[in-house]
Length: 128
Image 1 (cartoon, rainbow, N blue to C red):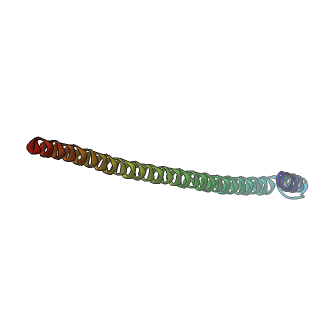
Image 2 (tube, rainbow, N blue to C red):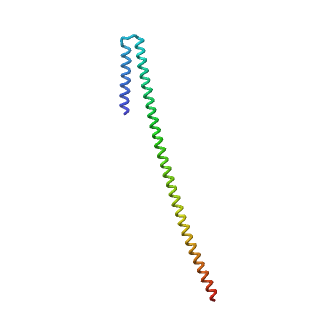
């Protein structure tokens, strides 16, 4: 692609030089020739300005697109991390609840054994 641009640029420069030489060597009045050269140079300058503005606009669009893609990917990563965090928190809460239930069951079992032992002891004291 760079080679194509170089060829086109070389052709435009060659055409400009040829046109300038043609105007200089033409059998016209000097003032008319100078005006023609000035008009031609002004046209070249305008064309170069237009190309530069177009290239600047294209670069700006490419930069904005790249920025938007990066921003979107970052937001996606943040969202994924947030989802993972929420899932981890829910898993921990679930495990804590399971541990609480298990501890409560063990406590109730131990409480029941203590009560049963106390009842047995009370019964044996009353029977004696």
